[in-house]
Image 1: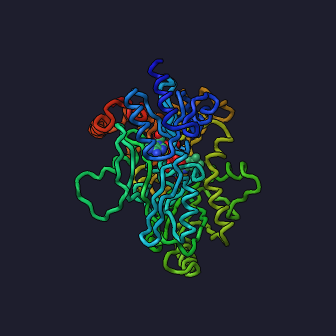
Image 2: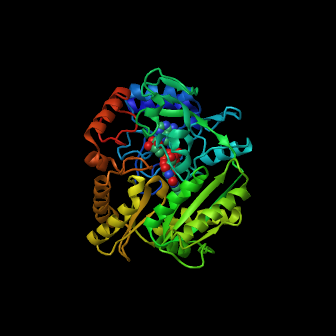
Image 3: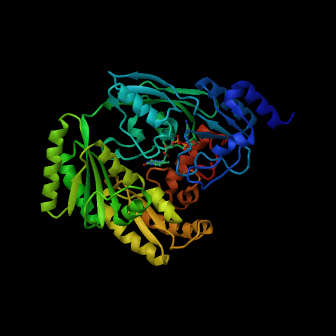
Length: 476
Ligand SMILES: Cc1cc2nc3c(=O)[nH]c(=O)nc-3n(C[C@H](O)[C@H](O)[C@H](O)COP(=O)(O)OP(=O)(O)OC[C@H]3O[C@@H](n4cnc5c(N)ncnc54)[C@H](O)[C@@H]3O)c2cc1C
């Protein structure tokens, strides 16, 4: 029996038929990333049902030196959960570990296994009269383990922070199969390094997250969602500051949508309509949440703040969603930008951040620069202005056929965009992570001292380099 046969036999025995699959057809759906950019091969799909099974499997992988690619909902945007082409690795899916182990109303904490889907967790929290304050478009697929491993952001970061801010404790299996039990939440604990922080955002390269203790907040009394029409992105920033000053205790989301994106969405979404009677160069989607006061009193405050903003030239027009259905419709317009743009033709996407106060200036400088360098392209920037993070998409010239363009011109465009972001003191990955998509760019533009520290940590925690090789760092 070869080593591979021996490994497969042992792993199959360990996990049983429900937890182990080596048939190529059964594996296929999990071998391509969400955006369809990367496809790999794997020798098997392992789906353990408990932390102990993960630990035993990781020990086996260590013994046979089999690389492991952890996977949650496979909704990541950077190809981090897709194996390479060698077929040497196993895919380690956490989807079967989907129990909410506990939900403590009084403490405002819940311990979820890694495979719990975000939407399911939202529903469980709501049932208990609580709320988990992180959401994003992929919530029907993204898992708690994946969200932690990518330190996901979403549309409520402005008030509540990224996933890192929601994590109180972590249980994980380390590269040698040891179980790190850091689930208990202590408000004060100064026994050296905060090891859970290393695992958050490590994209499966330092350990397999098996369970997470998450903070929950009381359910809000309601929300107000507003759509504002603006003359420029600079005014959008001024409006954000205005809203922060008057309503900072309630402001949860501030998203910008240029008119070009709104047009694409209206063309793409059947039965959709623009929230305002006239069109504006820029739009802001603003969400405010009533936690202590009642919703009517928040509505009055928001109306006053918007009226005042209009008097001061910070917006051209605005409307408040009349009810929850309309609020959802406004958000649907925002969430449909990416699919609408995709329907138009090829594009290259960049998830970037610069210091919040510099974002309008950056957008105004970067778009013309990229469009001038690549004739016929169209640059658009939309998203989380309040976090200094936008999705900077560059659309191919009209009529371009998808395929070569993305890997040739698209790559050259990305290089220019990332150079600009670096010049402006920003990040080439604001929330999606590095995965395999941006390994080269991180290598090219990353701070050498940071890269060297990351390599040292990786080497110490995974000396054989078996955890998600080729992701985040090109070599340990
Ligand atoms: C429509 C849509 C909208 C989105 N919007 C946002 C957004 O606004 N903000 C944002 O931040 N992201 C967004 N995302 C991206 C995505 O949802 C997140 O990256 C999410 O965190 C990935 O979770 P997942 O379970 O799908 O992980 P996967 O895609 O399966 O994996 C992502 C990475 O985490 C690793 N990993 C997964 N599970 C584990 C584990 N248990 N232990 C160790 N490593 C693990 C994988 O190896 C991989 O490197 C969006 C995605 C979609 C499809």
